[in-house]
Image (cartoon, rainbow, N blue to C red):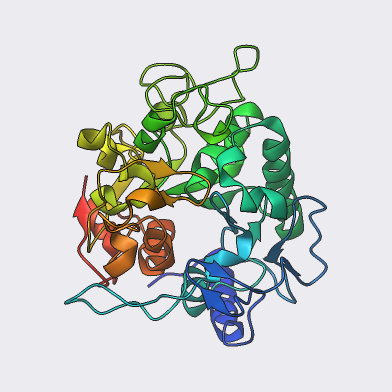
Length: 366
């Protein structure tokens, strides 16, 4: 095989990264109570200081040789949850043994290639019903991505996003015309078409701002009411499902839990199409959209956004956490799929080939 010097240099760097990956990571979960870790919010190292957000991780005594990866968490969450442990499993399948973060470390990523930011304050994490898309959050995410690029010297980063973090990251890039700095984008259970569970509270309920429609004076301020505003609808220039068709140099991937996702599908209204809520519209740069949901499906009951689960008054009738109870739902679609995410970012895969070595549960391509 002919190897040019640049390729040889890159190969050597990857080998060094794999050797270093056996050392302690720049991220520790601490005690884990599903679905959250308990370790400190701030876990930066190696002089990395983004100067933004409410905590995060990344950096070390190393040099980035791969495209750096930035993790964006979901509602009521924080960055360190990307080290959330895999718990239980799917009946008849072998559960993964590593968190998402540890899977990337296992595959040779070093601490200067893995970063995450917490964009919600401690108070906001405790009040998920009040969180919506707005400029203050875009500023945090944009500044963090810029800090990662400056620290690593990389022109581009990959984004792995979950739930609210999916649409928050897309809106950040749209508001700042910043897609040129993104190579690949992984959407995990995002509200790409809004959340059908918002149908119960309506598009203008002051008590549940996360489900709002859109500010009439500022289109970049919006909520998750489905198929209603310029972001959750099907035709506007800001339509989340159509973003890949307008950002063709970027490769897009989706992981979701379908009818097993309690955040999308715990809904008495709109149950018939709730399983499509996380999907981009098909296109050549939408390389794979995989349903990894397993176990119990959600119940057709109204959702309580104050604690991100079905209404407790009705919980005696249904399984309140969908697939996350005995399989894979909204949170385990993130926690258990490190092997798939790694494959999406590091191979030229399409559709089912992006499953890679993951055998932790059933996988279907949309």
